[in-house]
Length: 164
Image (cartoon, rainbow, N blue to C red; front, side):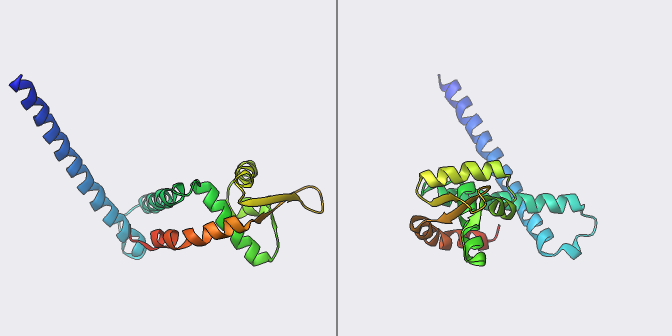
């Protein structure tokens, strides 16, 4: 019995050591990637692919942070992205916007925008109606969405300005 406990404890210690080494390696890699992004002219011998991967990984870390913030209020990252982009478009155009504009701004396909917009409408965050041509759906944010975005803005901004 004593022997099996020692074996379990030994494996746990090995696992802890392995995880600590892995975390340290990831932290070092993150620092190197940050340096690549901040000083691209000093990246002699570094492949452009490695720099682009570093940018993508940083974007994924940011997305996870924003998703964590949004999940606390019952939104997905994509729902937040659609709401935030719609708010920007409405501010720019001073009018409701069609789903195709939102798709172009977010670089998401129109089917995704349609599905996400329907879900947001069911949650009371947007109102949708057919535009005057009858061929497109116009989207406007509700007061509920405006309030929620105002509450999320400082937290998302903080996550966006934090160093990797």
